[in-house]
Every structure is written in C-alpha cells, then in structure tokens.
Length: 149
Image 1 (cartoon, rainbow, N blue to C red):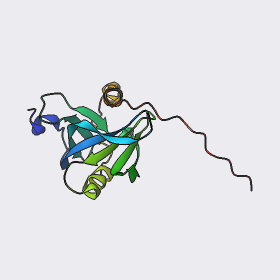
Image 2 (image 1 turned 135 degrees about the vertical axis):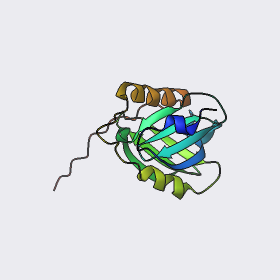
Image 3 (image 1 turned 90 degrees about the vertical axis):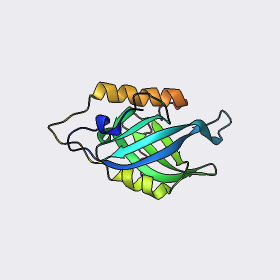
Image 4 (image 1 turned 45 degrees about the vertical axis):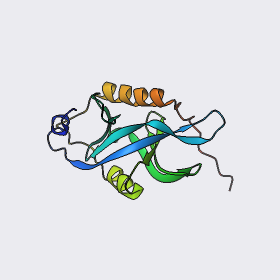
C-alpha cells in the first residue's frame, strides 16, 4: 500500500478518508452502485482516489478542477455529485459513515498555494481515466436559458 505521507505535498493535510462507491447509470437509465470500492482521501488541496486495498497510484483531482459539489439523490441512492471543469461528473456513495462528512470535507478543499502547482495534464488524464473506467461520458454543455421578461 502506498504510504499516505508520501502522497502529500508541503502544506497539504488530510481532511478525511472514506471508502466510497461510484454510481453508474445503466443503459435503461437506472442508477446502481459500481462493484469496486474506492479509497478516497480528501485533503485541503485535492481528492485522491484509488481502488480499495490495491497498490495503484491514486487518481489526483486538484480542487481547481472541481466546478461544483452537491448532495443529491440518483434513483434511490443518496450521493455526493461532483462536476469538473472538463464537463465530466462523478456520483459518490459512502459504504459506511455519514455522507454529510464527505460533502463537508470536499467543500473545504482550497486552492493550493502559488508556490506549488499540480501537473494539469496529469490531473486531466486522471479525471478522464476515472470517468472512462466507470463509463461516464462528459456532460453535455447546456447553454443558459434565456429569460424573456
């Protein structure tokens, strides 16, 4: 297992660690939990995801890639939905624990200080790798509705 201390950069600290399951949408439009559990570490700068109990390098999702976070329900499943600036999104359920804690930790992430920058190409590839693995296509970009006053 990769030591958590080796993953953290200067000034970074862990806010929470969770075992999560991503939700997948079936071809018929129903939402169901994926079979694989993920180890999610939320720090003050980023979200790190990797298959639970596996020796994979975690996917690194820096806070500046996150467009929005909200608690929602997909089908019958309560989850945290996270939208990225790449127009992808993931829906996370907790295996154990309180969903509010995960939401609060994700909401507490801040931009890293200017002296440290995550490699944007790697971050974008990590997002695409996660989304591709779990079968989520980018969200269609929807033009804002015009209001006729």
